[in-house]
Image 1: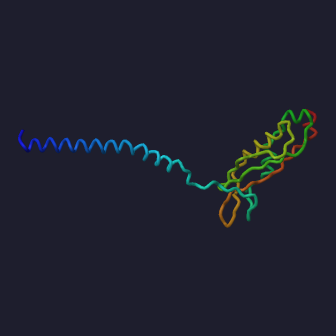
Image 2: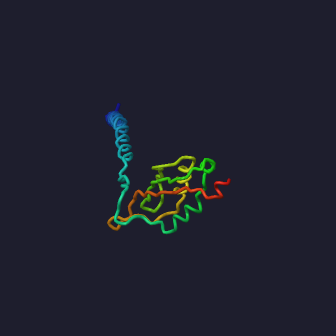
Image 3: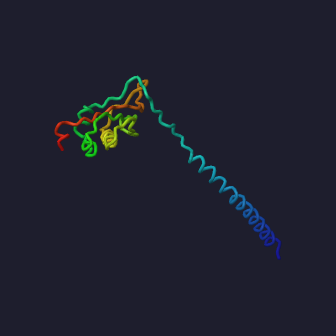
Length: 156
């Protein structure tokens, strides 16, 4: 064989050997790099929302929420049949954007009244959010809702 051809063969073999080693290293490192990247992307960089119990300026509904409750609250049949009356205490969160969430009954009276109070509160339109340091914040809000039978209800 002529010398230039031999040099070409040796160079080609050497480059293929180096390429194979690089590919092996790449194949070993790639899964590790993918794992590291997925861990970085999986971390939640946002801070969890802090929910206040008391703030400088409490939220306001911007509408007559008592009227909203009176208009939308339906006395449950089971409570009506059993002449059940009382007060259901509901706690909910008014979020930074004014939306209502995480509605929970703290003290109930049963007969379907607890579920009805939670349903009505969950359907509230947006409120004006609470403010702390001039910024809107999320806050817990507690609201008692009374269930009282009228003479019409007692006859049904």
